[in-house]
Image (cartoon, rainbow, N blue to C red):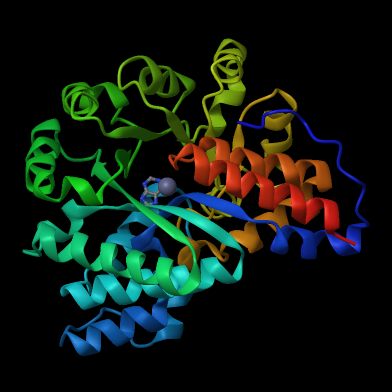
Length: 350
Ligand code: ADE
Ligand code: ZN
């Protein structure tokens, strides 16, 4: 893999947004249920004959004023309750992939939360088949490659995670990995030691949300107990110098989500975000959208707003795009192809 730091030509500040848009990139931290725009929530509710506790699209959108992770999750799970049929999961994924392709996302690894659907009687095959079919079609039509990562809800038990894993095993070939999400504080990674060990034995890639709101100790146990290959968010690692050193040395990627951190009050403003510090410390940080329909922006919104707030430059842009491919679970040859395309974009950009 091409890991050297290319010398990048300076790019004028007013041309940087165009470079950020045009550069090929991978999105590695997107909860597909978090891409449900209010318009689609209302359309799916109507199609499925469900009543929503909001009078209109505008009323729902105006409820998106979050104070922390849990205040968001309450609304996020309510929004996801309109998903019942395979076509619903397809339509949601299709809408996201169309937006991602416009942002020059050439590879996406999608998180999904099966337990929030199976708890309502939706079958695992309905969920996975809808997501998978949308990915196959988008690959054929838009050229974007798509992989699925099944997340366990950490506010539920390890036993429930095992049941979910059992339900998903018939569809093993449609999944690349497992993750861990939902309310972090009070639900440390080690609660899921057994199920992650089983997933590792089964050959799944492993990621976990850690250090979003939770302490650096959760990042340590995600690494040492769950043996994750990537940490989702991980921004609280900045508080622990030894952890920063470990992440840099082992090139453990962090999938950072700046607009999410802003909307969930992890940082008071984007200018106070620690992305630049993480990059300066040599960490394999990436930029991602998390739950774009709820946090005010897709990939390019995250890139352009963060670059403006932190005064990042073309070298940072190249590093972040390069990191996204390094951190992804794609095959070596596809990764090299994307890196070549990335370098060509930077070499020819005027
Ligand atoms: N589920 C969806 N978005 C999440 C986030 N940012 N943190 C934890 N769980 C989530
Ligand atoms: Zn997330």
